[in-house]
Image 1 (tube, rainbow, N blue to C red):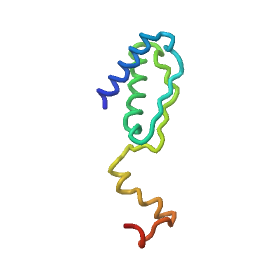
Image 2 (cartoon, rainbow, N blue to C red):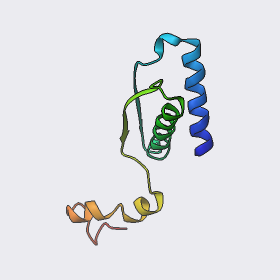
Image 3 (cartoon, one colour):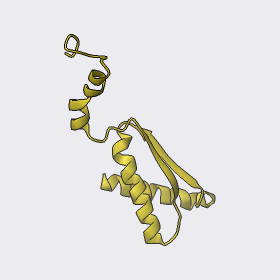
Image 4 (cartoon, rainbow, N blue to C red):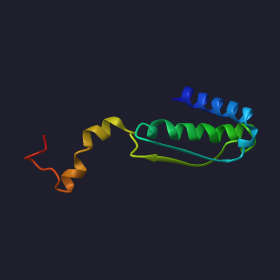
Length: 95
């Protein structure tokens, strides 16, 4: 994940070098599901790159993640709890 985040920063750096008019524009990252794993890391890498550069080259405004798949084991083994609490499933249809 760290290598991918570094590559993402490298990609955006090259993109901004090619299109300097994009530097400083508002940047929003968005994704869903597995994006809950990599988008926070990419966002952190962009903020750290700004610190290292001493500028706000990457004007990250927000990172949006819908239905994030952040903890696969926990999510897969506990996903029945909400429907059970809402009485959508019970012993007759739990399986």
